[in-house]
Length: 230
Image 1 (cartoon, rainbow, N blue to C red):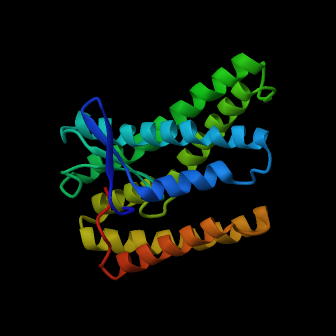
Image 2 (cartoon, rainbow, N blue to C red):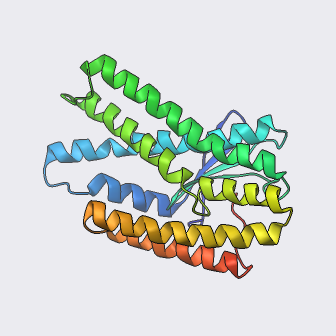
């Protein structure tokens, strides 16, 4: 999970931590394509956008866990986004696990709707004539992407975790559900990479790393050696 973690704050009983790997990713977002002072100012907007977006997404999981009787969670910012770690993560019923998995993308969609509505109110549309407009547009697009991306049936993303819980409900077998999840995840990864290659005419290094990493995790899942995700 990105190595050593440092305590930041507590939100409604849930402790929030940060890892050095998240700070590294944050620096990459801020510095991406920056050549002028104006571009740096725009790049710095990623700091509150990423913090707010990831925090609310993970609090969606955390609040759902607590509402379903599993108490508070630890929210951790790390190199691939965030985690909501709950002590009962491996002991939840499949039905409740699905609800908890989908609560994060639901929170992201809600934040996207609020940001999009605010952008329309401020700019009279989806234009970005000032820094506030740029901030709201980035907040809107980031959360729309984060919600859709997390809903893909690829483990260990939220859609993949919900899929595994669904398979477990259907087949009444954790091992079979885990293997099927790994297979569907790898097929979806391959199709997503092919589609992205045609649509975006190439993949960035981070995207390639992410695809290889997820592919490795799901290969281990098929072999019955997958690690627990929260």
